Image (cartoon, rainbow, N blue to C red; front, side):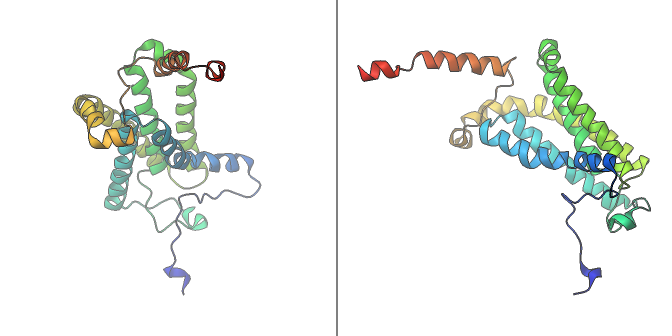
Length: 224
């Protein structure tokens, strides 16, 4: 089999200069979208099953399809360092990593902002971490040689724009149907729910759990 016929799956394959500690750190930063997709949203569906989170994930998938469509249409080459990284057979405009992270940061910020300033203020650390990772992703893709400045800038703008548009679609066009999805066979079978109308879900669930625990017969009563 000739090497020219081989093509790598680069989902978790990020290269950096040996001995470059900054490059090593930024290589891990580049994998954040993978961790969010495979870990974050999978765990969210398994343990939370929130419609807002499910449509959030759907939006990210749509965003990546749009990114691939734009890339194959424009067909802009990656920087010259692509030869060392062995990725010259793929296109670079716009950066999918930057688009993903800025879509994620934009949508997440709008979700919290829509619940009111107090909820947003209480999660400032979350927003700071999310946006910091987004900008670090921009820096990492240029630093590691995967993209040019124009390519990461395009991915950033597209990610912010699509994140804002999809948030509007979900919370204006689709949200009126959330109750129908909850009451559908799919919703009942998989316990899919919507708690976006509750300002502080953690506090609500905490109080509900405490109230339910008080109604559970104690072990001592059972033994009597």
